[in-house]
Amino acid sequence: MENMKREESAITLEEIKSKNGDNDEAAIENRVATYHFGLKRYRAQENGDCGYDAAVLPKWFNEEMFERAKILARKHFMALMFTHLCGLYLLVFMKPIFNVLASTGQSKNISCLFRRYFRTLKHVKIWYEGNVWDFHDDASKSIAMVRAMHKQVAHKCNKNNSREEVFISQRDMVYTQFAFIGLLILYPRRFGFTLNEYDLKCIVHFWACIGYLLGIDDKCNLFASENLLEIRSICDRILDDMKCYASEEQSEEMKRMADGIIIGVNTFVPCLQRVSKLSLSLND
Image 1: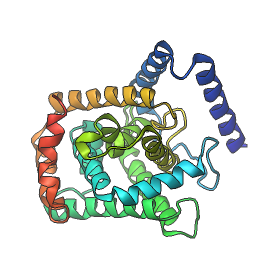
Image 2 (image 1 turned 90 degrees about the vertical axis):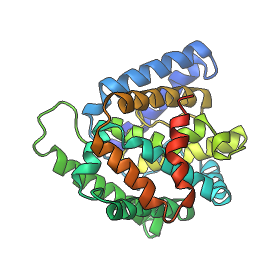
Image 3 (image 1 turned 30 degrees about the horizontal axis):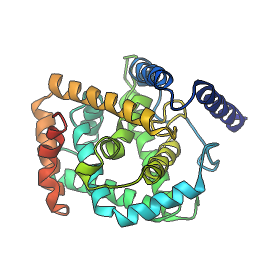
Image 4 (image 1 turned 120 degrees about the vertical axis):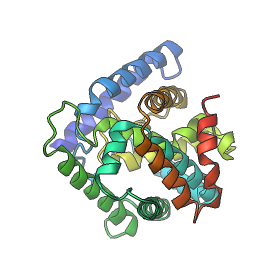
């Protein structure tokens, strides 16, 4: 029954998009503004895992695009890993997410940061190479492990939380989605990508599926649309959100964690020492 409701919701969203016209600038701007307002105002109060069943394919799943993304990931592997790390570096300066990272004890020193981000990239590599839809495949097991870890940390952090905002919320999950490929969407050439529009859509679709499997609700999923103009506009607003957090709420602990990421991960990604400079240059 839950799956049936979810499919109805997805169809309704597509009908709305169809009526508005996907390439109509006014319609796009209206959808972007509505999405962004909801993300900031309401999604921080919603649990980051909406409970979707990983055994059920999303209504909008496109196998051809998904498999094409995996081919592209093999071809552009190092560039993608670098892009992921740049975005994850920016996440440190977002207070709600920093608080969760700090609470786990897995970011307290350079050695811990090395292990945390090495594991993260190892998971992502498995997702690109395996079959996340096959429960017997390592990629599916990896997704399930990450999802379970999110639930465990969220339960621990929210146990004595009296605020309206929850730890590891739908908003936080969307910001994390952005961290992985949002910068690629906004600045493809800066990260060494010369992808055509279809190929970029395929990578976007892949990460929409990863978001779904990690429990991001369709109404929140940053990449569930195939309209790149709309996605770019939302990503641009999210990057502005990140800049605001970084300029207003930086702490010494955040700076130490960010520096620790550069030092720790630089041992297996030597070019990472340029991440902080590149990330800051995006303000230009």
